[in-house]
Length: 124
Image 1 (cartoon, one colour):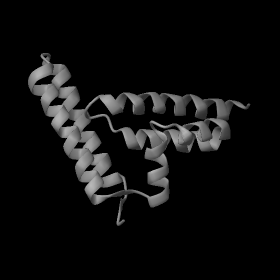
Image 2 (cartoon, rainbow, N blue to C red):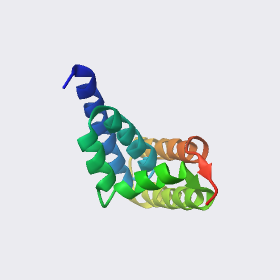
Image 3 (cartoon, rainbow, N blue to C red):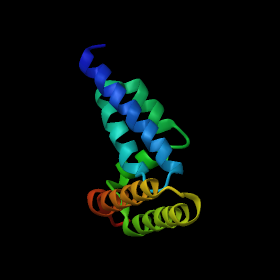
Image 4 (cartoon, rainbow, N blue to C red):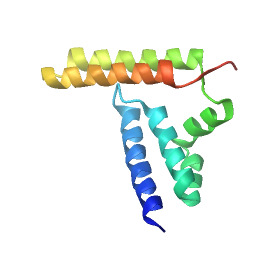
């Protein structure tokens, strides 16, 4: 394995970890991070890429996006709405520290921008 592939695998694994955390943490965009992971793995390790897309938890995110080349408008609205419900619950009831509240809100804004403007909208 050459150094370039090792770097891609390392970055892909970090992206995967943040994507998995994003499943549970409001504001952290899961789908774009998993797509980044897939892109990095497909360029560096066919074995890791195949494991990723066949994974029962995260594989469907990637396969659905790859098949449809994006997300439907209703899927985007659902994801962004659920994300903001969780963000608001966290900021209003669960987080006491102002700095952490600001970070969560900024992550939510980032996630909304990514989902709304960067992830392509498809018609299904």
